Structures are given as structure tokens and as C-alpha cells.
Length: 95
Image 1 (cartoon, rainbow, N blue to C red):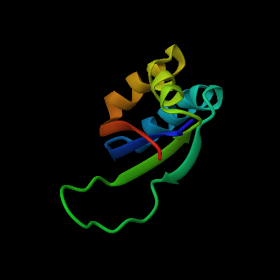
Image 2: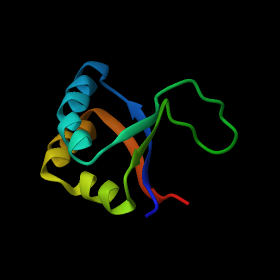
Image 3: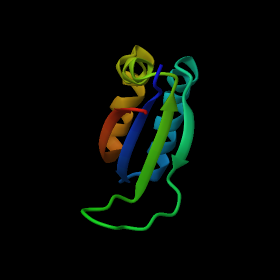
Image 4: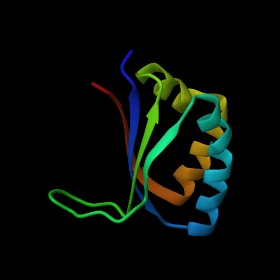
């Protein structure tokens, strides 16, 4: 089965409250087997509009990635994130 990946590009507006998002999201990430591959590290812009934070999270499957996002646990965290950051997020199936 192909793995699934969250790819998130984020601009954080309130770094202190963003910590609340990270803490709230942790139970969902643990429940659905999330493995962080990139988490806001240094990057080089090649094309298009950049965001200050880029995150890649690996899940056991694309369905697990979607289920994590839609879970009640993550939706609590998402509400916090949406108040304190602007983001684009997609789920991509691995090869």
C-alpha cells in the first residue's frame, strides 16, 4: 500500500498560539502514525509564492492521512491553526 503525505505551507501570525496548535495536534498525529519528514527547516525558493514554514508528514497510507485531518482530534487543532496562521495543505499519495 502506498504511503500518504501531508504537504503544508504555512505563514504563522502568532508564534505563541501556534504552540497551542502543535500541542493539540499531537494526539491525532500519534493516533494515525504520522512521521515528520520536514518541519519548518531552511528552504530555497525556486518558483512561486513562498511561505515561511513548510511541513511534510508521512502516514502509513493516503487514507490514514485524510482520516487524520478529518478526525475530531485534529479538527480541534485545526481550529486553533486557522486562527493564528495562513496555510495551504494537500494530501498526496506516495509512489
